[in-house]
Length: 195
Image (cartoon, rainbow, N blue to C red):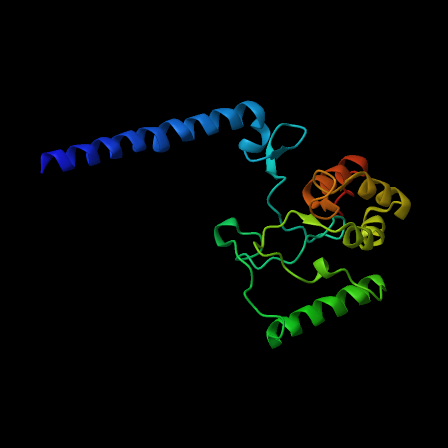
């Protein structure tokens, strides 16, 4: 009996050491050496060095001076502990009603006849930090008016933050909402609070 148990115990110890300790340390070491920013969460810092978010996780921006993100089904909006989609099918009346209401509101605000899909639909995780360039451009006039600057100036900032396809072929062009909003604040400081 001992002859059967000993190899099993040795194999468990060996594989625990190799796969449970050595391999994770090796992967972590390579990640920290080669991709340290990404391995640390792609943290975004303000001018003072304070962490204001991550380039990989969306945030809620509701003020008119900022780009607005995609709708989020994650908890109370971009709650990483509740990351998930709405799980409503395309024929679900609740989803249809919400999308129609959001699209009508955006049409009324912008005067646009065509609304980009990401402006009214949530991502699968509910934490998407990006929007399409079309949705970002659609918001330029509102941002310019709220900041008291020319639309062309806001559009320049947005165009400077359009990211291409990954490796030139994967995904779609996109705009990171947090990074673009920080650039808007740097280029056009927030209007002074009225009081």
